[in-house]
Every structure is written in structure tokens, then in C-alpha cells.
Length: 627
Ligand code: ADP
Ligand code: MG
Image (cartoon, rainbow, N blue to C red):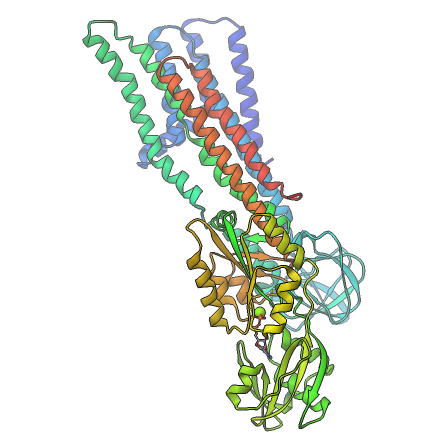
């Protein structure tokens, strides 16, 4: 509880007791009015002040205004009619404050939940200076420095383990509760907690570019992208509140005027009371509060599962997902290729592999990294001249003064090398030296463990088509598509072709349906941006992907796509329930109020009761573990 919440809670308790005492101890006349007025001001002074400020600033039609007019009106009426019944006015204010308090507590609580999960911001990094470990702020550590992370500490910066072995708790980042074992050579990301051994890490990113900073930035900015429902609600209340005020005014004035004109008693007090009740009932706070809160909770719940959603508009779009288009390498497959064959023509096997690895020494493509791993040595960078990477084709490089081309058949065509086809299954990496074909390396990738079930879950969640796009060979694409039960695939695509295919599918779908593209961002950032929802693999994906994407999966697990869809459906379901429930109850009460069947007590329920129920319901969006 914050200090303000504590203060308000005390205020609520004090004025409740005060009100009860006033009802037990009999008082009359001015003393009675004075005591009730004191109680009213204790509980409501801030609302009156806010309403006053709203009027001064020209933004008067908000819920503070409604409450102020309704309660001041009720007091005035009690004075005018000499009933001495000030209970209603004080009670309306009291319950309104209880509702406000509850809502601020609930919002604070879910914010805290999310912040706890976001408690990944490291406070310090340990660096060694003159044989001693000292703590420094992570943003002062340069790329390539060595930092030491002891058991129990958070990894402050992304890097590679250079000494030690340990298990890492990655649950704050991925929702995955199983620890991850790491040892020398493994890449580690900031935000994980070191559980066992002491690790020495060579940093590969500055703090600002590290995973932790990127995630925090993402989550903090998520609120600024509003969903259609949220926009609707704020537009709705801009028109709704003034409309209600005018209706209330009409209700207070017109019927008595007509009655008086007809020569009957105007019953002014009666109609004004109805109008005031009308005002309390119509307060739109249940909607204004619960709709954004539902989205907030949904996004928070998702991030606890390692699914970062950049805004509630994307959460809304996810719920309508009917087409999911996948990239292959690194998305459905692990992107960790094994060399399964080296077929050489003009040079020996080792030379061929060396040329390939050296040419790839600057590329971040999974293929490049696999070839370097197969090479097994530090690349001798002094042998490497200019390097040019052609996305969807491969790389061109100058090595030992020779022009080396490493890539697929398209690349061979473009350098004029007469390549040979290979019948071994796998991805074929052709190599040409000075334009002459030198042989190829066969590499193969395995599909991710959860890829098939990820596709099956999407189908179960009502996704119509799961389609794979790849720049790889037809044979490989066919194998993977069959193994995963995909509805279709397109192979040998250049990055631009992928955009075109996605646009074709986009053109074929109906209005409300959405298309999600899932990729690792290597060569597919344009498609990520073009799709209705771009989903990026965050752990292995490139920075460009995380930038371009709308949703980031922290653990690269294809099962999380279906999970994200289910989370969004639950959240949207809750939003709908709240909207219908709140508007429904209010409509009924408004009609009853106008007809004179509702008193202030029913009005309080229609306002505060509905709000509390809607808020409790909204918080359910946070529970997504078992979806
Ligand atoms: P995917 O669509 O499967 O993710 P990409 O679009 O990244 O694949 O690449 C398509 C094809 O282009 C690869 O299968 C490979 O043949 C070739 N290629 C791309 N980049 C490289 C590279 N750095 N080295 C060798 N071949 C590459
Ligand atoms: Mg790719």
C-alpha cells in the first residue's frame, strides 16, 4: 500500500465511523447539518476540489463533476425540503471513495506484480580492478570488459561466459522455470539470475543495448499504444458525460414545468432528486477504469510467460489471428546447423571449409555461425579482405586475394559458377573461387522440439492456416512442412518475395481477421513490419527483429505463439464482459431512475458496485499460467 492509499483508507474508516455515530446520536437543526457537512467534507473535499479545478480548466464533464453535483445537490435538497436527511449525500461520496480506493489498490497491485517480474534491472556489475572486485554501475561497463557474476546475483549485461559454469534462472525473462545450464563459450543474457557457480563474463553489449534495457523499455512504452476498445471508451465518455448531464438537467426541469403548466403540482424536489440519482448512476468510471486495466493486466500476465506485447492494440489484433506465417530458419528450426557433408571439387575439404568460414566471419546468419563452428578455429581475420553479404543469397568475400562466393544456387548463378546439385538432404552451401565452382558443404538443421505442437496448438486455437516461408531449398522446405503439419510452404524466397507472399495472403483474408508473421528477424524485418502482428524470436533474434516486431517471445518457443493468442482472447473476453455488464446495469438503473423507481442507494450500487466488480474481473486477465 502506498502512503496515499493508507491515508485514504484512514479517511474512509474515520468518516464511516463518523457517519455511523451521527446516525446513532440524535441531533437536530443547524448542529446536525454542520456535523454532516463536516463528515461530507472530510470524505469528499478532494473530489470537490478536482471538480472545481475541472470547471476552471474547461474540462468539467468528468466523474468528479458528476459526483460533486449529485452530492451537493442532494444536500441542498435536504436543506430545502427540511428533511434533515443528509445520509445519502455523504454515503454516495463515501462509497465513491471506497471504489476509488479499491481501484487504486488493484491497479497498484497488478502494477507491482508486473514490476516484480520486471525486477530484472541490475543495480551493479562486478569488475576486477587491481585484484579486487568492485561494484560499478552497469552502464559504465564498456563492451568487451570482463565482469564477474556471483551466485545469487543478476547478470547485468549480455555477454559470453569465459570462465566458470553455472545454472541460470531465466524465469523472469522467459517464464521458463527450468534452470538453464551454461558453461564457457555460452552466450548469456542480462536479467537472468546466476544460481550456483561464479561466472566470468566477457560483455558483448553495452547496457543500453542489453536485453534487460530493451525489455524494460518495451514494457514501459506498451501503455502508449492504445487499443481500439480503449480509444472507443475515451471517445465514448467524452460524449457520454455531457449528454448525461444535459439529460439530468432536462429531467430536473422539464417535467415540473410541464406539470405546472398543466396546473398540477410541479413536485420540483422529487424531479431534482431523480435527476441527481440519474447523475450518480451514469458515472462511467467502471468502463473508464476497467478497460485499460484489463489490457494492462493481460500484457502483464503475458510478460510473466516470457511474451512481451508492445501495446494493447497488438493484444487486440492477436485475438483475431487467423493466419500465422512462419519463417523457417531460427523460428521453426533451431538455426543450429550441423555440417553433414563436404563435397569438394577443386580444393581439399579443409580449404573449402576454411574459405567458407572466413567468408562468413562477419555474418550473423545462423548458417554463418554454424560454418564457423564447424571450422573450429578462430578465423584468421588478416586473410580476409572486403566482405559483402547479400541477403537471401549468401556472402561474397575476398580471402587470400581470391574472390570467394559462399551461398545458394542463386548466388552461384550471379557469379557465373557452374554449380552441381546435391542429392543429400539438407541445406546446400555452394562455394566458388574466382568465379569457378569449388564444391559445396551440406548442412542440416533440426526442427525445434515444440514446433509441431506449437502448430497444432495454433490450429486448436482456431487459426485457419499455418504457412512457412523460407529462402531455403524446396526439398528442405517440404520435409519441414510435412514434419510439422503445416498447411503450406513457399521455398527459395528472397526477403522481398516474403513480403510479397505475405501481402498476397493479407489480400485474401476478410476484414477482421489478422495475420501474424513469426520470424527471427534475420532477413525478415520488413515482413515483421508488414504483417498485422510481427512476432519475433527474442533470444536468438536480431536487434532489428526485436525493434520491428510487435510481440517478442523471450525463449524462442513456438508454443508461446498459441499461448499469446489465448491470452489475448481471454483479455478481450474480459473487456467485452465488462463493457456489456457495466452498460447493461447502468441502462437499467437509468431507466428506473428516470421513472422514479431508483433511489440513491441503487445509484451507488450502479456506480461503485459495478466498478468494483468490473475491476475484479479485469484483474483476472493477469492469470494466464494455465491457458
Ligand atoms: P530462411 O528464410 O530460411 O530464414 P534466409 O532468407 O535467411 O532463410 O536465407 C535463405 C537462403 O539464402 C539460405 O537457405 C541460404 O541458402 C542462403 N543464405 C543466406 N544467408 C547466407 C549466408 N550468410 N551464408 C550462406 N548462405 C546464405
Ligand atoms: Mg531467417
